[in-house]
Structures are given as structure tokens and as C-alpha cells.
Image 1 (cartoon, helix red, strand yellow):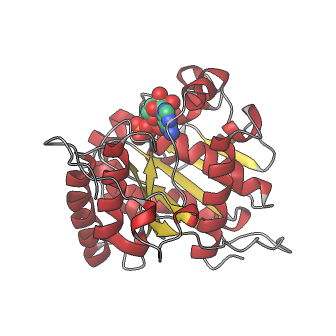
Image 2 (cartoon, rainbow, N blue to C red):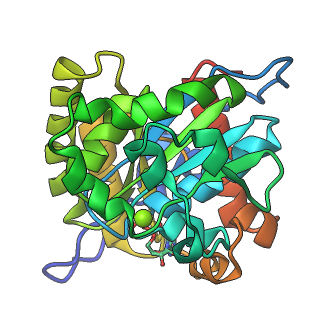
Length: 303
Ligand code: ADP
Ligand code: MG
């Protein structure tokens, strides 16, 4: 007989009680491990699949995931372009680029007919990964675009000339569902939703899913949700485990099997201005983003 629990303390799964469940292979969120195929090398590059990392909440790991998923994809031989589409410029800064000093950024590419993306794109410290940088100038675009014809298609139009050069274009969205984000969703083939493993995180997902449905209906019929990515997961807290389990219950296989744990290594990489895959090559965080890259490749049928 088990000892009674004090009130308010939830039950923990007891491995001895359920002989059918192999807890050693159970992953965060309560799912079983599924092998992810090793991607094969590419013989040619492009056209790029465009993935938007989107969640209207700030601080959920969009920028961190854009940098590290991008860097991990290059390790599998994929050519990657990261698009900083947040006027905060955190993606650019996180790659060690002093974005506020740049004369030309994505702002010029979206607002000026004469400015071409390939003239503004810069190399990063990671071989095979390039960046379309942004800074505070982009905040003016949101206002100026309102009166443009075809305003939602501006980013898609700007990226078209470089599509054939890359295998993946990752767009780091700003934390809102405003016109810049709508542009990102209109330019994208797929959406990745980073979701912090915190209770209130679930609320925002309905609104985001709604927006995605509207964009699919009205602007971009090829848009699909590639997956929901659990971030800032702390396996030591019951809370984190419960949130992830609820997300898996609600969204099933849409949730990536890869879950990114909370670790101080990520803030450190921002200061260092490089991805975790080069900053701490063998760390669990680097391994997690490599696994995510394989899952993304498999979901994009790019094996
Ligand atoms: P967003 O782009 O959604 O606003 P960020 O990627 O900038 O979110 O992350 C917000 C903050 O949290 C940053 O300081 C970042 O370094 C940190 N962070 C991101 N992912 C993790 C993680 N898995 N564990 C701990 N800190 C993280
Ligand atoms: Mg960000």
C-alpha cells in the first residue's frame, strides 16, 4: 500500500506500478523515443525551404533557436540564411554583429526597390551560414508598409532572388502578430513555434494558430506548421514536465520530439556572439539543436 500524499502534492508516475511502460526510453512529454534518420549529404543546393520561427510572446527562444538550428543545419552540409526580422536586432547581435552600426540592413531590402538582398547579406562565423541583419531602422518599415500595395508580400518578394542559393532560410520573427510577422508568415513555407515550458505559454498558441489559419486562407496557401518546439525545459520541476505533457496531449505529433532544456549556456553564447554548436560543441544544448536539425530535415523530407 502506498503512503498517502499530503494535499496539493500531485502524484508522480511510479515505474513499478506499470510494467508495460519502459521509463528509460520515455522522453520529455511522455512519448517514446523514435529514431531520427541520419540525413544524407546534398549533391546540389537550393531552392530554399523558408521556415519562420514565430511566437508573439517574447523570451521564448525564437532567436536562440534560429541561430542554433541554423548552425546545426550547416553541420549537415545545408546552406543556411538567417533573416533577422525583429527591429531589436538580437539575432544579429547574438552572432557578434554590431547591427546598430550597419548602414544597410533588411530595412533597405524591404523598403527600397534598388537594394538587393545579396548586397546586404553578410557572412557569419559559421561556415555556410549567412545573415540578413536588422536593427532599429526596421521598426519604421512596419509603419511605412501600411500604405504599400501588396504590403504583406514585401519580404517574400525581397527573398525571391536568393532562394536558389540556400537550402534553408530561417526567419526570426519579432514578438508580435503585426505586419512584420504577417510578412514572415507570407514568405514562409513552414512555421516553427518555440514554446517556453511554462503554464501561460499554452494560452498564446491558440491565437498564433488562428493567425496562421488566416494567413493560409488569405495570403499563403502553402503555409504549414512544421512543429512546436518545447524550450527552457527543466526536467527537475514537475511544473515543466506537466506543461510539456499537456502540450503533447493537445498537439500530438506536431510537437517536436526534441526538447531544449534550460541552461545558462545559452545566455553565455549570446555574450560570446556565436552558436552553442561552436561555443560548447559537446554540450547537451548543442546536441539538442543537432537532433532538432535532423528532425527538421526529416519533416521537410530532406533526408
Ligand atoms: P525570443 O527571441 O523568443 O525573445 P530568445 O531566444 O532571445 O527569445 O531568449 C530569451 C532569453 O533566454 C535570452 O537571454 C536567451 O539567451 C535565453 N535562453 C534562450 N533559450 C534558453 C534555454 N534553453 N535555456 C536558458 N536560457 C535560454
Ligand atoms: Mg528574439
